[in-house]
Image (cartoon, rainbow, N blue to C red; front, side):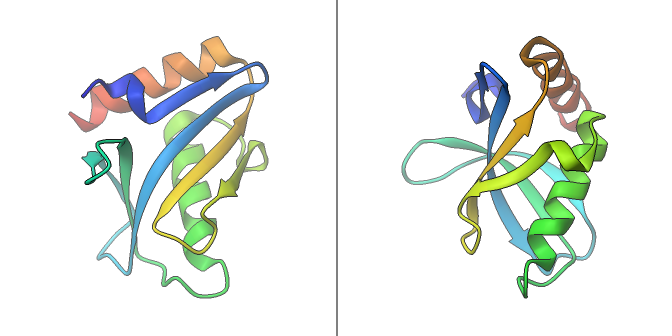
Length: 108
């Protein structure tokens, strides 16, 4: 599984494929996760409960900080109430690819 498999560049930015674990002890990016469908995802642990968007907001905040982009450029585009989510990120695709590479270097 390649680190690049958990995100896809788009003309206006990128999409990150995430597996959320709410109710964790602390907010952290826990590396890569691969489920039964063999599709890799970025494993994200969040202290916030999955209640009224609290976990989604915490995921957005954590990813924005890790990627070095404003929170306003991220949104949950799929899986708002599910563990498996797609996060849309608006920005320069080349810069986002570099940010994802730095993120994976830190978490490995």
